[in-house]
Length: 316
Image (tube, rainbow, N blue to C red; front, side, top):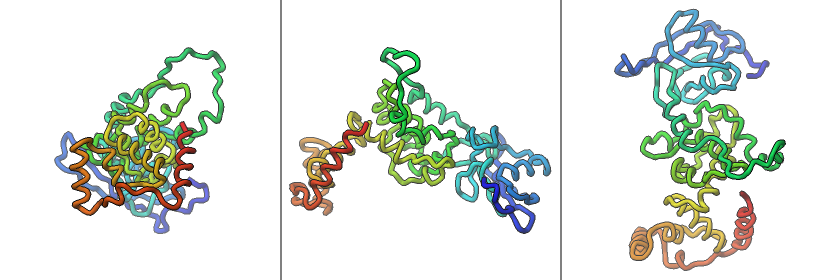
């Protein structure tokens, strides 16, 4: 928070509605409203402390560092994930637990599902080559693409905002997991099959690039551009899932023809033989493709697209 921040409220009072819920005793959540004295530079955590300590209300909330390092204090304020220890309190706030994670009590959420999934993607370096000795020859350039990923404090704000992760049957691991996985996948010392983990376990191709994760990230990590897209590029080359096949077909057709041909992507990424013919007929009957789109070639600008694809293929 900036030292030049203005006082939180001109009226001298902060009104806060806190979502209360203990799944061991409560049937449904409820909201309780409190008023606390406003002070300059007051943070969300300060308001919660006032309710707990001064008003002596036994609310459940979590914090450790109070300095934007541990990520444990994330809550949802007026519908948006925030760090309670860092973001300024508002004159009128509704504070809830972050979405898409189980609630332990009130504002405290469980990190067990996140930690279980993190374990499934092997969150440590896997080294199969002989250690070259100390100091290990590592250059700044080798780690330039992942420098922002190491700013992640695992607060799970991105998981809370992700619309795909919100669908519990999607199988998508969520952006927080993909940040950790991508950091390792782009590490030149790592020898694990991160392509398979990204494709099969984390299901990276379920990401729809809506950028909600980046919008709410308190450390402003470019999650889509520097974590998820590199993972998709790695998984596309050898992945076996339908998402990997579609990405591969999209890439190869754009590379070869200098244009995106939706009909060919659908046919190449789908079934073969009679299955492909049936798919093509359905697409044609619904007006999604024409014979010209199937057999057409790239037009103006195709050569520039091909050159751009050739250049991008040189990236790791």
